[in-house]
Image 1 (cartoon, helix red, strand yellow):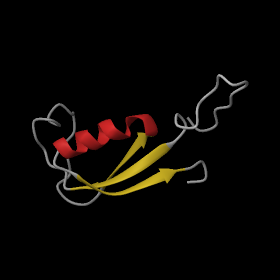
Image 2 (cartoon, rainbow, N blue to C red):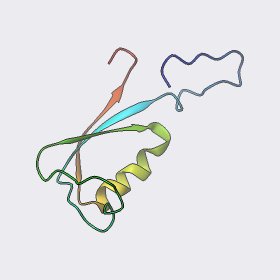
Image 3 (tube, rainbow, N blue to C red):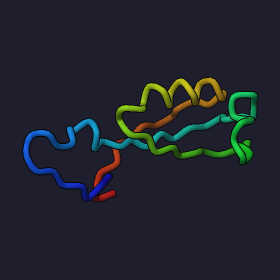
Length: 79
């Protein structure tokens, strides 16, 4: 995603290149995430990187897994 260049007006929109990092606490293992091939840690924060166009879907998924988003920050090329 970073480092892509476009020529002309049909290129990548600004929303397509935006990425955000969620800090999530309280995730727990349940039927929603039993499909994963890894266990969820019971303590501490988990960081999830999400493209702008999937932010709503990811928020809903985190809520279904019992998590709480405590921080959202944009990631830039300098981060």
